[in-house]
Amino acid sequence: MRPSTWTLLGGGVLLVLGLAAWVPVEWAALAVRLGGTLASWGVFSLPALVTACGAGVVLASALPRGRARGRRKDRTEARAQARPLRWWIVVLVALGILAATGLALLWLMGLAGQARPQDVPKARIEAVRTAMTLGAGLVGMSVLVLTGRKQWLAERTQRHTETDAAEQRVTELYTAAAQQLASENAPVRMAGLYALSRLGQNNPGHRQTIVNLFCAYLRMPYTPPDVEEGSSQQDRRVPRRGLRRPDRGRRESSPLATLLTLAPTLTATNSQLADDDYRRQELQVRLTAQGLLNRHLRPELDESGRATNKEFWADMDLDLEGATLYRWDMRDCRVRHVNFTRAEFHSSARFDGAGFHSSAWFAGAGFHDSAWFAGAGFHGPAWFDGAGFHGPAWFAGAGFHGLAWFDGAGFHERTHFGRAWLRLDHEASIVSSPPPGWVIRERDPGDGREGRWGELVPAEDAAQEATAPDAEPTDPDVDT
Image (spheres, rainbow, N blue to C red):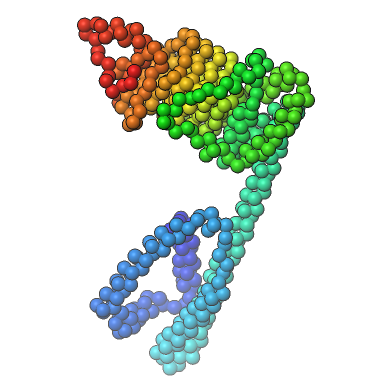
């Protein structure tokens, strides 16, 4: 039972004991007589005890089943409906009170008949008074229970009213902010983004939905002002090698339909403004969305590893498939799942020290400037197949705890994988694929990590090590 149930039961027992203390009856003598009466009825005989034990076993086995059956019911429906007070319960309680009062009266009258003849009238009056006191006490307890139930129902109704009002308010704010994103004025769209950010900060249950809306806005077709039209939306064929594409539909929520419905308005707005002016204004809006999004994903850990950023939203998923991102800064952020499939990164893309606690998809992504993944931690599979790095790529110190797939990736400028480590003993049917020009050599990181690890080294250095007399053999289970 819950603590509140035990508290109510204890209060009822204390109330009964308190009422019994006021009754002018010798309870010790009554207990002795009651025990003798029960013994004369055979209650304490062996057959009666065996019957009582059997009934106890049946009840003990039936109660857990009833509780398990009740737990299988939908908790939401159980809380949404309050069971009405059945009329037969009221009748049973009234009959029980009358029966208890009548039995007490009969028993006390019998005891009064055993008194001395001159004390019998007085004893009978005391018996009636005691029985009436017992009945009044039982009625008072019933009234107390009904009053408590009435108060509980009133408080429950008040809580539901407040919850409904809060949900309605959140829905109104969410809809108003989403409509602001379709405004033709860039400052109004920025105000909508800030309103959504504040809404998510005050309502943790809606944070993922708001993150989905931010991502949906950034997925809208867009070309930065310093990029030629059409160059940022190249249709790459991503080699999947039989791998399952990330399910975009499962991370989008139904409220995103609001923004998708407003997309024609955004398109009409584009034609009303000069193209360059619109691009510059829209770029500021997108930078605001990116800044708010990344601020909520950066925990700012202290020395003990605890988040100090009060605006940090934990366990968020990002779906930016095909998005056009400009000066993307995700340094030291923590996310659960990310999908940057075929995304276009213009200017520098910063992922330094970022933590990806589930899968990270960069398949077919285009990095048109420097890409920084130094010190990033990939705790799930990382897919970079078909990605194009048109600027310097830094993966120094990155840790790949799961699969790392670089099949078909193109590196057109300097690439740094120094001190980048891949775990080799993960359970998978597909082994990690290193980037072109690099191989995996099994080595001990030396920092106490569990499992088998391999370091990414240039193919030329690996060839020189292989020709050395005491060269360490390459792990045959690693696909190079």
